[in-house]
Length: 320
Ligand SMILES: [Zn+2]
Image (cartoon, rainbow, N blue to C red; front, side):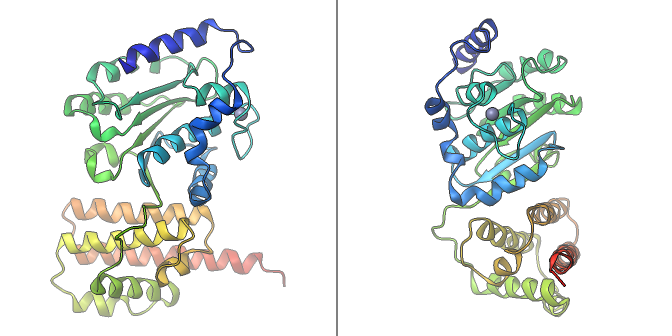
């Protein structure tokens, strides 16, 4: 049903001359509104930092479904806005069409209404060989991609193996764990600020968080703790990586939380992106059965390196 409606929308958009029958600014803005909240400012900063060299596949997790999907559309607008600035104008013909899902280069496969079907995925394949019709980048959004069936996911993997430089995919899902690991490992993961309730750290995880913050700040203390926890299992190690991601999410949302978030707050968006990748890499290593302590030690060392780089940048920027 969604596909049929989509098809007629696309056909209509192609038949319509660009200056005719554009949706109104208010109508298009409504589609983006959940992406424009102050809470998501730092996440939008990540996307701005990536816009010149967008990843082939971007995962948006965390937050809620409305924010994830709105942010996927905002990303499509950022990549295609006719004014080509650091923010999509949300008023040009490209932005308006994207907001109204009438843009010929936007493919929104929407899993919110039911599972995304293999036929919808297959229908993408011939399109991918073509140049974008209207904008700079074709954007294929799989909204709530956790509803992909296994067959559809495998078909999508084949599509992704054959990348087209003009096409960017965005998957949204509550948590990356809800997607096939082979899909997740091919993309960038951005975590929207989590809804705030019930996310207090346990005392043990608070200990890890403090140790990671001190190590990142001063380069010491971490290995004493990790050596003392010689028998840490992979599940507990995953928890420690989530501590890092939670600190990152708190920092992005401007929430007061622990020492780690406070330490990360001054870092520029590019370095926060690097940290996000470090936590994801550690999680992938743990899934691939790397020794949990080795994986965590490598993660802590990488975090230390990024924070040190942040201090160097801040030092260089200070007037002498
Ligand atoms: Zn625009």
